[in-house]
Image: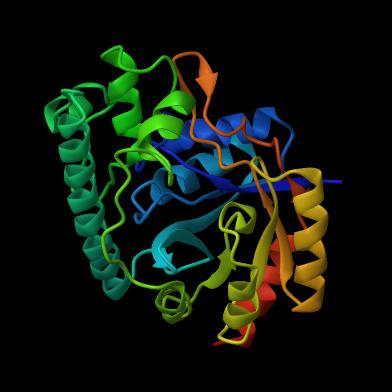
Length: 282
């Protein structure tokens, strides 16, 4: 049986590996497919697709769109999108501008707490220069905090400063998940709600299911076994496709962020389910 990991990040957003390296790692893990789902950008997809034949593995073009509902970050995955769509590219550029604003606000809060971290520090810690169509996120800021000695690890950076309950956390206005669903469908893609266990908003699943949500990321590296059983039941209730993803972000300071490629995986036949939804909505 072949398996798929449908949630990985690359250097195009806040991962530490080139897209082709994610593909290589997926093949090395014995997977049959891997999705490239960078935050608010599709800049890593072309390289990954080019590597697919080299490593004999299927690459699913995707994206992870940042939204807010009830004051909480909600992430919506989009699979099999038309990643060349001008409309989609313009919309993702708008989201990255909000992300840039958020980064500046977080740095301002950190400075107010006595932690002297600038965007220059963040950029200096990057493993590769960022292009205009790539994104910078909280893991990059966390990495700068580690490098400057303010925290010992990425986990501590999020727990103390950058996570939802952190002292420097901010959440400027963004689109809602309902809008993200619309954008993904209009780009020919299939929307799936990422890691629902991180939100505590189960009522949102039913609402989005009525608006075109096609799947639920039941199996995720940050879900407990109890959460996975809970969200499997909700996926069955709302007739949503069950997906799985490691949320791999690469390795920083000797620690893999979230989990290695393939740590969460599902039967590769889920790709046919996603494609069927895509075809039915044409």
